Image (cartoon, rainbow, N blue to C red; front, side, top):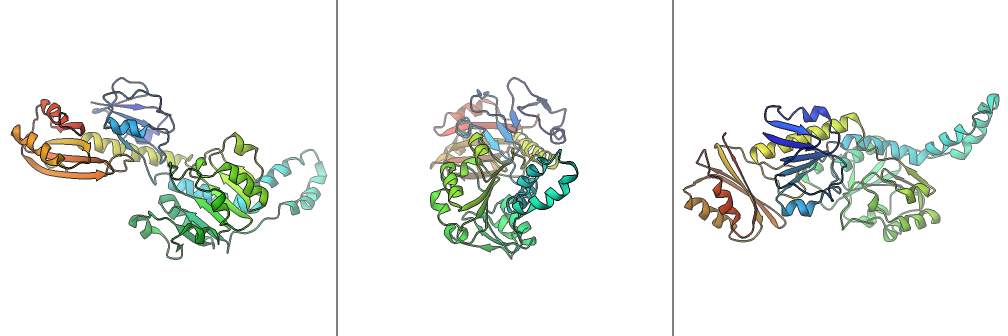
Length: 391
């Protein structure tokens, strides 16, 4: 029986994929095998020794202590692309909001309450203060061509915009989905210099914090409109204020406002609605649950943010999973220990990511004595061992 702890409200359609006979799901439980969450902040949480996996029903994992999880051999999953359409649709709305002064005009129209029969004439007189521009024919610069970036690039192109994209780490998978009408550029300067609109679709990391700063604002044209539906920390707020005051930035839209942002003019602050659709929540929950099930039951890893991707069909009734430091001579030491116990390796997969190696080993014995786990853990560099075997 696997124990699943939910730290947030998770869509029931996703949770229903955990078979009731093999899984126990609760908001509070002791010794959970896995945690499934959305926005709950885990950084001050003591991680149980039983914990094998954490699944974030969403893309960002800033609320999860990745380094601590990695040290303890806990695989952390996210759900890239599951909420992409919801974010794309909000970004399209953002393009319209930023170009047509829609929010300001709605707020102004409400001030006419009580004017009675004068309202139609006042509307006609006041609408000139909210004249905007159309997006057709304008240039959208897309920074980050992942799941969301590709969707917004294709949608904007279909709306008649000229779209240019930049992503030095673009995957083949996403490249194949990108419209041929989207122009890919190799540098950030040629991208920003031609943009009427800029959308950020990159993760927030130590390297990308404050990515849009004074230097990048200097590469842009006047009256540019910036859409940040990725993470708030991607834009240097002090530099943004200067760019707005100088007229370089006409509008800044963000789905991640704080109090400082809320006080600023020329800013449209949306309360983190990007993935707040029924469809996105369901899709994220389904993906998160399926990834946890596959790891707990078979040891396969897909969409982990701290472990290498590793998937191998299970041929035998017993499987050993090992995580170790990515250093020489580890596989031979593992093989030596198994051979000494009379265990023959039938099939093996070894995958690496940064300083971590992950091994899936199918062996010829249907039952493995649990003491083998301690012998493997005694090898310097191995920090996680799991055994999956027939009941």
